[in-house]
Image (cartoon, rainbow, N blue to C red; front, side, top):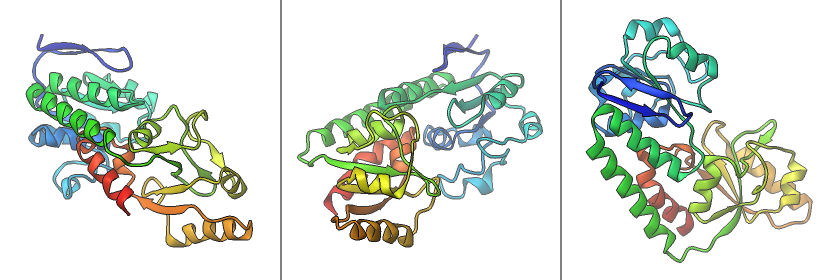
Length: 266
């Protein structure tokens, strides 16, 4: 037995040998596998695995994160499949584990993310690189935490029609707090829906418009700006942000504090 590990959904994942053929159904963890030097082992990814650039042209796409063509995974003959509790459905996970050992992450905060990175390192024989990456992530966040950026009340929008935001039991909430954006929806659960009037009533200092999964336009921002003006209120600061730095929980985290510095300096 190469390794037996308990994943973040308390499932036992047993690998008889170091995996040589890996399917990843989680974009942020696909990027992590690449940064751990495992591109040659990747035999299947989702159409949302856009980082690093060009990966979709080099590795077979097996579907999306919610809809997977299982026959393509069978054909890839993986000896390890990487899933996530939120991004992939239970049906997908159950089908995957009939094909190969399947690791399922469940990530709500930065500590969960670094634990997952260490797990991936153990399973793929890249523990040294994974531990080094975890140390870099922790150091970079610790340095940012000690800097004198003022925390601001912020609303993070991920969708429109209806408007949707993030509650305090999400990974994005935890990263916002680390980035000194105080989530004005603290106490809410998962992904609450909001009306335009709700947003006005919340009256945040900053509204962060995520680049994913919904691509907000300048017209969307103007709609909110005009609504505040109509209510005779000063509009919040409106910022379009790269959602990957708030929601991706792989190796991209090492660069997230630098991205926060850029946001706070604007």
